[in-house]
Length: 112
Length: 110
Image 1: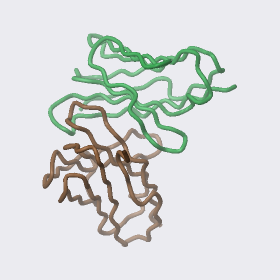
Image 2: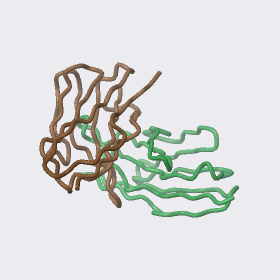
Image 3: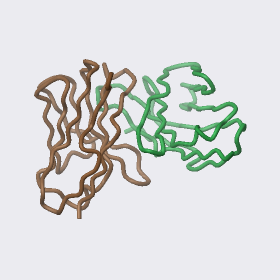
Image 4: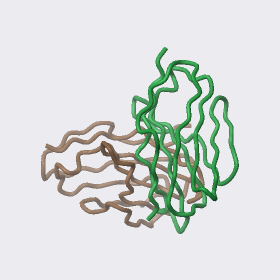
């Protein structure tokens, strides 16, 4: 049972480049989340989804887009990367909003 | 917005010591999560509780709803317990109702 799988694990981008981070879960969870983790700050919610075909903005959505075309996958896109988006990104899933979270292993992104 | 504060920020202890990490929050909550982030970066869920106490092995989590405070205890600490421990308060109101603390960096020395 793989749980939550994030790809890639590491990425370096130049300013202005685009990329997509993929999150896949095999637990049939409805809720999926994208967070970013920066030094000295708690995890901050970028976007989330409460089911296939639905997405919503979190605390820090600017510069990111998401899609949830299939229940098991939640994609995070950066259309034009900026150095301020250098961070570690975590995907998480849960059965409901009141359930334990299952995290992916993170993606370390550097934008130069 | 809920404000979640953890203390201490950093803690170094000797193997075998009893460890306590504290979490306080400003707004009433439906549930509180304790998470562990390993040195390699992965995050795992340790507990989710809304009242009383939960125990798993050497880990114990307690919550006092009236005082808006939760504690995570580690008994007989071991170097493998070295990690960042994060609390997160769920205020309800939807999937975005979770606020994370900044974490407590714990080092257990042999």
